Image (cartoon, rainbow, N blue to C red; front, side, top):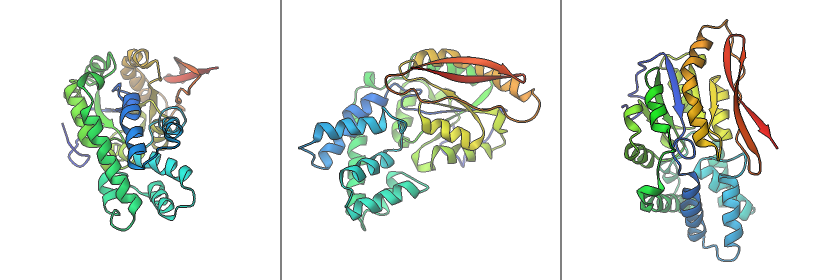
Length: 295
C-alpha cells in the first residue's frame, strides 16, 4: 500500500474512493459525542452554555448539511458563532475557509502569531488523544465493509479519502482488517477531498471510471467537482448501503461501454428527521445510483 499520493501508482482501470468516519467506519457519532465536542468545551472553558455549545457542535458536524466537515472548519464555524467580534477568531476563520491544507501541521505554522491557532492546535491534539483512548470495540467498521472492499478490489484501485488525521485512519483501518484491500491513504495533510480525488485522477483514471463513496454532502461535492460517480452511504442505513455497493463494477463497466458524455451524478446526505432509500435506474446504457428523499 502506498502511504502518500506521491507514491501511489495506478494498477487497475477503475478507482473507488472511500471516506472513513461515518462511511466505512462506525466512528462518526462517538468521536463527536465523546471527543471533539467535549474537548472543545474543555479547552475553551465553556461552563455556562456548555450543553448548548455541544448541541450546536453536533448540529454542525453530524446533523446538518455540513456533516463530515474538516475539524478546523467546524471549529472556525462554532467559534465565529460564539465570538463574532473577536479579531483573532475572524483571522482563524478566514484561514480555515481559504487554506489548501487543513491539518495540524498547517495550524502549527500560524500558532506563534495568533492565540486561536495555538488553542486550536492544543484542542486538536487533545481530540486525537481522546480518540486514541476509545476502546477497540468503539472504533469498528460497519458490517459488510471488509467483504465488499475485498470484492471491489478485484476491479478497482481503492483509495481512502478522508479529512481525518493520517495516524487515526491508518490505525483504525489496519485494526479492522481493511488495509489489505486499500492501495493508498489520503487524509487531511494531503488537502481537501476534492483535491485528493483530482490528484488521483491524474494517475490515469477517466472520471467516468471513478467513484467517491461517502456519507456527507462534502463527499458528494468533492465527487461532482471532479465529474466522478458519487455513491451515498446513508445515515442509519449504512449496512444496507454497503450491501448494494457490489453493483459498482457492473455500473462502471456499463458507463465505460456507453456513448460519450457522463450521466449526472446524484446522492445526498440524509438529514435528521428524514429517511432516504437507495435505488438504481437505467439511462443511456448506464446504471445510475440515485437517492430518493422521503419526508
